[in-house]
Image 1 (spheres, rainbow, N blue to C red):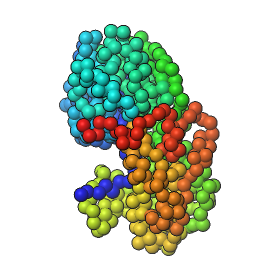
Image 2 (cartoon, helix red, strand yellow; image 1 turned 90 degrees about the vertical axis):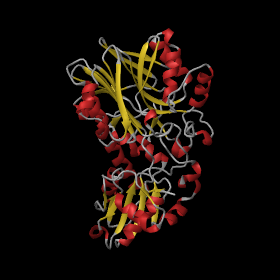
Image 3 (tube, rainbow, N blue to C red; image 1 turned 45 degrees about the horizontal axis):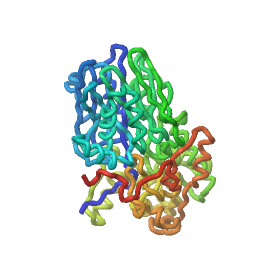
Length: 469
């Protein structure tokens, strides 16, 4: 049996769309946009391009730079594109499920890239299959394509609205026809999607860091429930009734790149604010503050600033190690952790350390890091977490363990402290976390901490509905 060293929530997916009204190379712009979003998914990637008559696409398992080269990009000729990087939350991890997905029907063709998760996909798929629809993948995203094609006779926008009436869950979509690029965000706005402008050309992306990479200007976020249509004439917007605004707060805590802005809030600045609040709620008598890199960096800086304790990088991350699987014996586990993170012994030796992390999922990696710090000579290790205890699973596009595997759901803070071997342990409160945003966002989904989901969710056993297909 193999054991996963990584003890973090797994990334969701990243989507990118481009409507070329200038002389840019469409596939290259999309390639660079996907590279900027690579942190959101590393299992597969794909690009589909429309030349006005036909769709050409290419997708494979692996990283963007491994999949695409100059020769492949030259084959992807056209003026509209959609791209996708994937970490699978529904459907098995193989190339059939890589996106973008495309379909041909009586009115033409569609290509789609999806970030999110539908919680009623299983029922919808069964109904469609009973009526003769044939599915090529095991992803919930294909359900969206089949529903839009089912209602195509109503016209594209009406077909999308009918589909949105039926699907439940989270979705940020980029959709392409022969002459249109369309961005769609679910009525709760759980997954992010933004609009940018490069010259006279429009682009859509999961995060604004993709615009910075290609030199585009951020225009605005796609609104919850908005259907944003881009064509040669420009932009038009249709609205589906907005629900309870609920942007996933874990985008700020862990997922999004620190140079991205979501709903007008910079991720790096938000993480520093979380760290400052954490220092107020859980001070420590210590010599150094060090982060668990990279997602703990900004929060640790905020903690150090507010506490007055010096900041140092006591752990070094090996950025060239993928998800590491190791044999389940103690010696190999220790090597597996050191492959990911190594302690700078001269920094921590003889010191009382505050270590700041963004979250604790199972606690296994936290324990190994603390053991490594003590072996390097750390005198005390105080753990501070810049989010509340994770107690509930996510149903909206983040691959979280089941509730019984979430240590924050089943154990007390004192138990977790003893389990990981820390001298003290402090989590940020939910109230403190939300106060860091000071009313700058309409609302967040905090269900993984509070259990307050923005919609009714299925029983936990049906969390990811196609996983066993």
